[in-house]
Amino acid sequence: MEKYMIEAVSIPEKSLVEQAFSHIHYSDAYKVTLPNELVCDVDSISRLFLTSSPSWVARLMKIRDKIVNLIGLKTSKQSDLQHITFEPGSQVGIFRVINRSSNEILMGEDDRHLNFRVSILLDDRNGMKCATVSTTVYYHNWLGRLYFFIVGRIHKLIVPSMLKSMMRNV
Image (cartoon, rainbow, N blue to C red):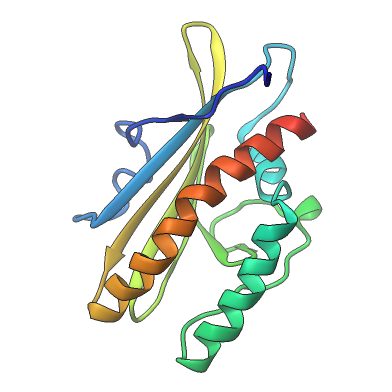
């Protein structure tokens, strides 16, 4: 049995991701409690999370990029995640760093069909360190709704799988 649990939670109040859009069409958040002995900051947890993609996620992203390229949507870019600074404006794969605080990194992208934000928040709850990965989406049109109708189902598998993989790498 795994010694950690991935928990579906609400978007953290007053987080950068909660304030990213005036209206949110979709949101989810997943939290994991980190080992107390882990010395970390939001940059190191973000780097660990983003480099913990199971191989099936990388394959799905390649397929996604080929399909969306045909209809003119943005595709992911390769990044050296070991040396990324997570400063606003930096590109991290499919994500652009939009904002940050001392304990949260807000990434995302704006496209013609939808805008999305992903947050990695590091906080303490009752003396325990927790990492919460939150996603919010704002649809511009029917293409955004259709796209996320399909992607959203896979997204609900990807984020928890990446958190589990991250915890195996801690």
